[in-house]
Length: 420
Image (cartoon, rainbow, N blue to C red; front, side):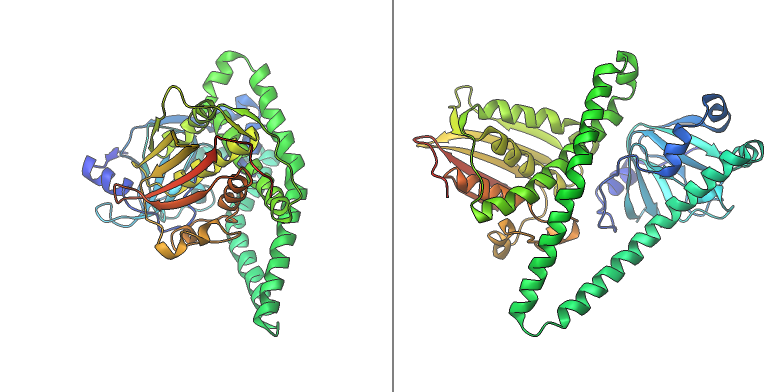
């Protein structure tokens, strides 16, 4: 088959096209099929998998082609495109560990979309013909793979169905309440129950995952760790994000009730900002976002709760990355202004409307901009409560360039903060 390549103009057009799907973040490896293949005998696996390399703009397969193989992304990122490549509809992105074109292994039918490499991409290719031979030679294992593949294909449809049923039940229950006050109280109760459930069920397994990753980094040989650095970083980053979400659910409830305590000590903001830049470097690279940090060399030390300041910076950085388009930029600034330290994160992207700039810091709040992205809306609530607990202020305003937003907060220098 002759390789097909996009022109630089076509590739740039696709990069700048917003996905039609609201879920554009690539997912970590989480497929039963992938787990099963990883546990398969290496000799058998070598008969099944061929590694292929693609360059940016190269088409992996085209919509309408007969599906003769599926692919597992070993490194890099691809885009799922439907329609004419001159005027494409971008359905979403796929990253390390994800599977594309799996329907090809079940039925010899045309592809429903095209796949184009956005970066330098390495793929594991499994041909339909080789897969069928593998099934005949390894019947028991083949049935397990088919069940895993069927589970993966069915999961998306079941998730959509379950989500619709839950929404219908909640809508029916809320509509039965007699007054607007009762509706609000019931919604708040349901949200709190959801928060408590997530905190209870996720905190322990997340700690175990984080510990396991740390052990791998300590015990794996350097060459193996280096070859799999992208996968390890991807797991670590997303594990940290989930842990911050769980901690925010707990902390927001405690802060709103006044049942918490700041652990104060000297904090080097410049050092914390450098750590945030280092931690987010892999995901910034994935989304082709440039990062700049600006601060004086003599930035004063502040008296604060270091762990909470670190999480404030991490939440604001996550928020900036989430709403910065590919090719955009994020700028971090820190400096002294009279008796306070001012820290700001400015990103390019859609501007938050004036009417939403206060509400965005409220619990479970979504704006016309953030509504297109999933989330509980708790990160900014935690930031507001934590900053105010330190005696500071936090706000959002349009970027001075006229493109994007500037989130800023202050911390006092003169005295220790008063607890609420």
